[in-house]
Amino acid sequence: MHTLVSTPDPVTSKAARFLLPSITDLIFILLLIAFTYGTLSSRLLWDGDIGWHIRDGQNIIAAHAIPHADAFSATMGGKPWYAWEWLYDLGMGWIYSHLGLNGVVFFSGLVIALTFALVFRFSVLRGGTVTTIMVLLLTSIVASSIHFLARPHVISWLITVGWFSVLDSSYRGNGPRGYRIWWLPFVMLLWANLHGGFVLGFVLLGVFLAADFLKRLKCRDAGQRRRASRHARHLGVVFGVSALASLINPYGYKLHVHVYQYLTNRFLMQHIDEFRRPNIHGLPMQFFLLLLVLTLVGILAARAKLGWAEWLVILFSSGSGLYAARNIPVAAMLLTMIAAPLFSRASVGSWGPFSRLRAFSSRMDNLEIELRWHPWPILVVLLTTASCFHQGTLFGTPVMNAHFDATRFPVQAVDWLEQRGNREPVFTLDSWGGYLIYRLYPGTKVFVDDRHDFYGEPFVRDYLQLLHVEPGWNQVLDQLGVNLIVVPAKSKLGDRLQQAPGWKPIHQDEVANIFERSRGRFPGAKYRDPWLRVDIGSLRAISAYRC
Image (tube, rainbow, N blue to C red; front, side, top):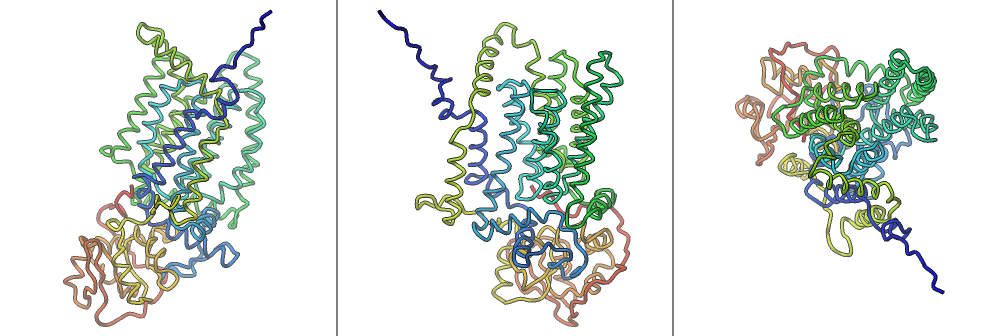
């Protein structure tokens, strides 16, 4: 008598599910390698303000206290400062102290890679097909490249994706995991101390609340109206408790007032590049527009009625992405997760030659959902962490060398100042201020950096007047008490200083020039309110795009 023994399917066996990497794993690993070891690693340090984040974190660790006053500025020293990203700074200070810049780049790359991997995973769980999600995800990644920087906003990206997933799952009533919305206030507690993007959490809560109210008003089914009312009550409680949680920060309600005043200051919003309308000629904006077109195609192809929440998220994402450059990454991620299932609803997959593609995609979808909990992403993270602890080497081979780009930042000029033993406060570009803080603090302070909310509109007005050498620029230097200036080698201010009496160049290289006041030195008097109010004839940006 023969007994038939069934053999486990190679795909569905436990061993295969454990060892075979999913597409989510591959996305995470490839992005992490690109950001940590590949060409994108240098891109993460294209913004100098990570420098003051690192130094602020080290100050927090050393003093065991959260800052309430500025320590970096020669003009605003001692002025109250809302370090609203103090928890991120604390983490960066610790990582830098143990792993150096390699660790800072690795952490940022890890967060970005995890964010896009989750966008893919959540899109699959929402009903999208693997093939269409890959197209949408690649488009989203290119659009988001406008802000691939080692800055605290990447933490907001990750939290926003998770926040949306929880709200969306709860709204659609998927499974028994509706309890997860009650964890959102705890997430808000962390978010409000990590980045000012916590405001977006309340916007998304408001979007889903509005969707519930619209469903309650427009839906004819009594059962759905009752479920919408119940869900709205739950979201209302979550909104209220999250609002209370956001007040648990070092500055209380004053942080919310400060953020509101900053975001509603029209002058600053018009002059800070990342808050201005995106450049339509830039590649990220073009891919964002492509993503909008793909979303519209998905809506038309699906021939299905979208829910209120989907419509509102699409409208919010489209409007916010077109309104300001810094909104493009989050808007692109939200659109990807919303648009992904629209293509699975389309009927084009059943037409002639598309039937095989649909069958293949269906198998890939099932496999992707089945595969989980793999060792490969964990292994890559552990190996990269070990490399950071060994100064960027892996098994004796150098694989990481994170550094600030010497063609983008005044590396040689700062080296010269260090060798000189300079202690004089330095005036430089706002986009270079963070780098100078990173290199020269605490021995040397700067007159300006890119904390525009801290310096305020009057200061920024005079900074622009000086930067663009408008009438009265030299009086601004005198008012500040500037004796030392580091400017780009090719700049209006540098050209004027070459000819200005009382100033002399003391260092020149291909990136930056250093000028020193040759006579009538000012004692570096601190800036005193009110500032010189000089009108600017035309609107100008503070600095070029940083990405």
